[in-house]
Length: 280
Ligand SMILES: NC(=O)c1ccc[n+]([C@@H]2O[C@H](COP(=O)([O-])OP(=O)(O)OC[C@H]3O[C@@H](n4cnc5c(N)ncnc54)[C@H](OP(=O)(O)O)[C@@H]3O)[C@@H](O)[C@H]2O)c1
Image (cartoon, rainbow, N blue to C red):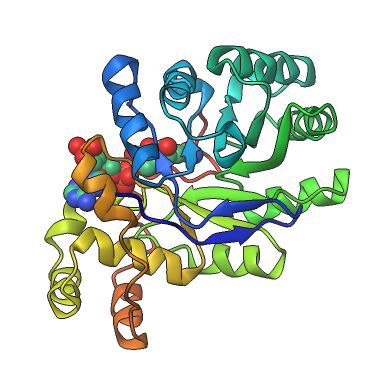
């Protein structure tokens, strides 16, 4: 059985599915089997990263399915240690070799690392790699509005999307508003907050009972109604299908507000504030 997922349009005119598949920790043969299963169940947007060391696994999974390459939207990310222009260009090429792909649909800067202050060089490399046909859409992860504005001011190119930590305990209201006003699509990482405390939350459990859906489906439908592209990861085929079976119901305002009330200022899972947190 496959489920079809609605699409949204990026500021560069390219389209992506409104829900994607996270691949962090999916590696090797088991990982490839899980990713292959996700594609066969209807996922078309895959999220990988150079630092996940699984671009090869993603490439292998793609080739094991019969889905044509042009129907898939494959994402990878540039690590913090390769922000220098020349390093970034080589890393994009290396990312492609690892996956055995000719192009990535989306390539993102993984973290801004503002104290190192090299993300502008990295951005210029992504802009050029797009011109050379190595990438179709370019974006970032974990950029605060001030970082995004600087990219626009210095290069004239606003990222197509920004992948940020977003789940019911940290709903990023202000950042989402800024994205909306500036034509940047919000993509939610750890959309299920890694399935820890959220699944025990009474408010979410009550809403799930009311709608006769699972807590996971309620959370993912909430992302969709916020206009954010969630990329849940699951190695479990039944959960993979559950997580994209969210287009036959709609949460009312009361449910949306009840979920909004769960957010807290310190709700990041590991306190990774992009203003100070660095990842290489
Ligand atoms: N840009 C960044 O800095 C950044 C940071 C973190 C993550 N990401 C991306 O975001 C993706 C998603 O985030 P994540 O992997 O951290 O966490 P997540 O998707 O919020 O949660 C994954 C966990 O939820 C479980 N799960 C999934 N569906 C479920 C369901 N229906 N019922 C119960 N449990 C369920 C999975 O278990 P099973 O696998 O055992 O089924 C797994 O343990 C990552 O894979 C990665 O691609 C990006």
